[in-house]
Amino acid sequence: MDSRRLTRNVGWLWVGYGGRSLGYFLLIVVLTRELGTAGFGELSLFLALTLGVSLVAGSWPFLAVPVLSAEEGSIGAAFRPSLYVAAMATAASLVVAIPVAFALGIDAPASIACVVVSSVALVGLQGIFSVQQTEGRMGEIALLQTLERVVALAVALVAVAATDLGVVGAEVLLTGAAAVTFTVAIVVVHRRQELFRAPSDAMPYHLISTVMGAVGAMGIVSLASYGVAYADTFTLAIFRSHSEVGIYSLAYSIFTFVTALTAYWLTAALPEHARSSAAGRNLKEQLPLPRLLKYTGLWGTLIGITGVAAAFVLPLVFGSEFEEAAVPLLILLGGSGVFAATYYAFLAALVGSKRSSLVAKVGIASVAVNIALDLILVPPFGVVGPAFATFGQSLVGTFALALIVLGRGASLRLAAVAAPVVTATMLLALDPTSIPLASLTVVVALLTGLWALTSGDRPDLRAWGRSSS
Image (cartoon, rainbow, N blue to C red; front, side, top):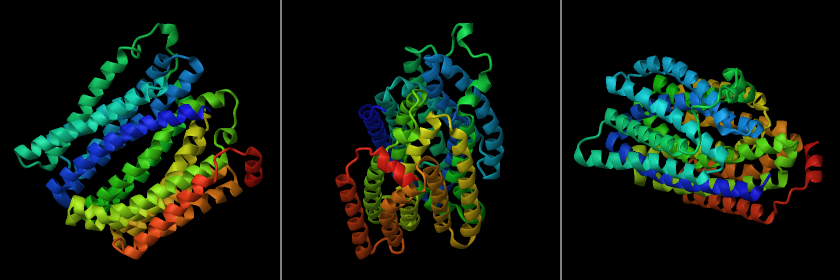
């Protein structure tokens, strides 16, 4: 694998995510202060539905574009069957999502229309990103991601200045931003790629089986990922108040801001892994252990320092109503965030080698753990319960994949690198404003980063083989 090109591509995605995150961060500040905990909780349920349709219906079919185009050499021929499957999955998901919206109290006509339009736009953006990903245009992905949030932020600021922004108004402005971004994206990409028309001999005869054969199991993974991401929100909505939904949703939003940096590894690395696997390279060659150890340590440093900063800054930025979000946020970052970099590295390699069925099995186990812990912990403990549930499923998911790819010895080495930051951050969750605990977390994070920087990253496959046996 060309590590220099991969690093450059990930860098572009991080630039885009930085712009998108800054825009979304400012948008969340506006929405939390305007809507309060209860209103932000209601908006979070709307987002859980629309983002859920995007994840369940749009994320996995379009993974077939880089995988199939690596074999066939045509982006258009890979895109069309993926679009066909994504359209069917979107329709099926909306059939479920709309009754759920009514059950959750999202029943205004404008809100239902927003659920449909926003879901379709987000699924469409997944398809556009898959084409840009396969083309290697990571800078273009970065630009479009930033555009979506900047448009939403601009409209929100105008709306707040002109009138009181309610929950429905917030739904409308988020939907409009997604629709505008998708329209711009489809115009730009369609000018250079013939995505919707082609000679009949370029179109696979069996559209569904073409995609399912390449990434079908990832549909189960996406469903499981949705369960992991939003089972917490729905369980809180069932057993607790909308205010608690709002508090936890803010914590989870900040958690995803950070961990999505690692999710972009899947976007950048998947085409490389697909080509490497097609060329006959095994997973251990594609994922050298010394480099994984180094990246895990550096990522742990970022998580630890981010946790400390967030614990002190969160109530100042979002208001005293959201002060309680610091505890679940620290549990999420320390318990789950540290393992995110390793998880997505394994995920990209397994999907690229067409072993997504293994990922699906692990995903099912992970979401089962998450939901079971939610049901046990949410009723008595409120917003802390789903944070621990997410921690539990992260342990199951990450180390199951590590055992598959690396073996027991190497997996234990990865756990040893992550353990200090995990422990320190979880201790800080006991008292987020404690100066001694915050200082301890910073020291542990910096020592972990120092180790990672001085450990070297040259792959030693012979040593890896010994540690994995």
